[in-house]
Length: 593
Image (cartoon, rainbow, N blue to C red; front, side):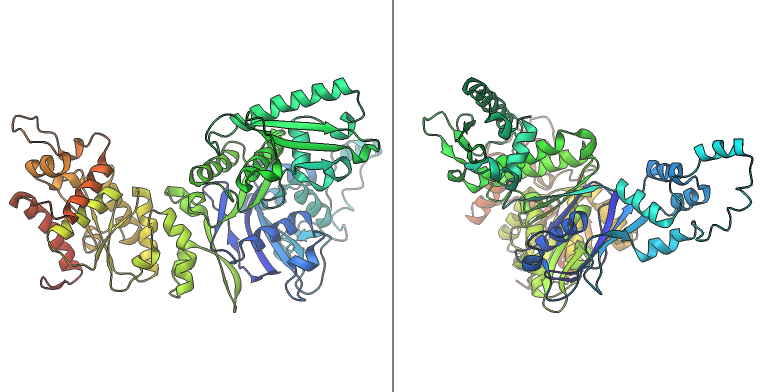
């Protein structure tokens, strides 16, 4: 059973999120936005739904004096529906759920404080109650059976006979919600036995490495020493092998776990240190926040993974994964989360404002929800397309992490109303066309916007259209890249109509790559930096870059900026054909600059 959507009312900065649908393409939902937008409030509200109120609810989570309410809708799969039939023996109910496999559950009530129970939403109650007649009027004729037959009927009688029983049964089949607080679930340097229960990371450590510190302290000294050595070995191996990325250069990390018994058992201490083989082990608090997050989150994932059956029945809620980690390590966090979702079946919802944790390739874009906050409407959760339709400045700022993830370094430059945006497939197209603009003294308002991948192009265009930005697109004619990009845009934005698409998109004919726009002599002289021999076999220019496509393009741009490039008429003619089209579509006069 999958979590399909949620709606949150009256929780912290949230007035009413509206219904937020999770991605249908995978098991990950990314709540992206700036700090203070209310991303954490969404995660905490979902934790409230799954696990009830926390000790600090009144102080931290209540919105004024209002009453919170969270609704979650779940999608039943075929096995879930079959399980309902086994419990109810109701063929009509089974047929109904097969056609209408979504049920809603609610915790809280906007009219009053009511946090203890989770119950069917009004919509679900109304739809399913009709399968459970209240007065048993259908039972009288069926109960007049012989005593011997009654025993056989009893063996096959339904376990669920009313709407309350169905509510309880289906809810028990839903996924459990697990909340990981990146800021508090960290391994301490020292903890006493009596305080272990207050530290989720220590409980995770015990579970992963199959130890119980409260029992170990009662053993003799040699047994304690053996356990310390085992934990040192296994915890160190785990930390060094579970992640590909190391946070620091150099040797391996070594966990040092010291068990220190005291006269009063509950006062016995457990010390967690990290040793880099330099003779100076550090308590966990002395390590960087990034390292502590890294190690604690690793433990959390392993603790969840101990029971493989349980993982696929979880909704894992994570607030700001990757805090304090550098760029490559953040990408590893994303990889591990996706592995947990794709291979082990967990549904994962996490918040972030880090571009490295936001995927924009292909179906990844469908998992992104933009979180924003205004004084009038509070925190809202929307798809990128919904959010991009706004024109206010805050909308532009909020999308900055997403825009950066798409390979664009400055959103404000894109949204400059004076700028004429030309979408291109990759960074090398950006470099070459920017260089040609410089060499041929073309209109300064033209900006070549790299989408950084074919699948990312529709996403970028949807943002530009949503903000009413003036744009055109120029692609090469390679079937796997430029032509594919053209076909994607034609299908999604131009009704699959070539004439309509050609008003906005140019395919540069005869170019399998932007490099093919050069004459051979120019390409060898100014890009490859070697003389062209006419006897050389006729490969396309785009096939001659030998894995240095982006580097060669960037170096060519530098030459152009220094005035070191003088192109032949053959190259200039082809390049001008591209700019002539751009000028025509943007209605630029040739004497405009």
